[in-house]
Image (cartoon, rainbow, N blue to C red; front, side):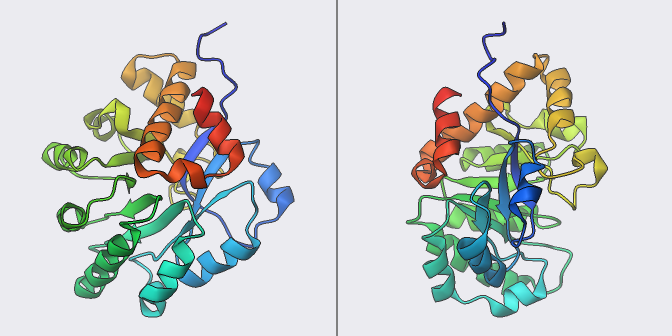
Length: 254
């Protein structure tokens, strides 16, 4: 038996799940632990009240969603975030032209998150430098850069800020290899990640196999390391105490 056979389930640190998901649908995730990010405060509020407890819900304001930015209210966000272990999806999206508004919202979110024991799943598409600038000004120990496409210098800068990196199966081997192994977390970004990133939330087996090849490790050891990475960022951010008991139990044995 492998020393890494602890019965740890698949882990998915960034996926989009409808807040009205049914328990039967969640059972189809085969026990995977999924951090289910939301796009708007309205969606986050619904998830907080009605979301399936088997998922770890996030409180999000997606920077690529104009409606999410329009409805953002700092006081409402602050009231909601105290009910979550995860903030996400938040950040900046350089594919839009409203960067000043995005930046103002993101900075406000980071400020509100400063005293909160949460993981923060951050979007930085086409806005890597601006995202790191904001994090440098408002650092958070739970920062996780989702699908990060920065160059080697930007990876080093992000790591120096204490950030972790969640990677989908659609990310290239070259980009994955740039990331420090002790900061990597798995994700599907379902459904945006496409089939290469998983057919459903929690479908990270293909990614684990690739990481095993890239890192020259066994797949069981890869899963163990990914859970250890989550344990470290959850401990550093204080979010472990807000995570569901089931997830806390897995962190204890990782």
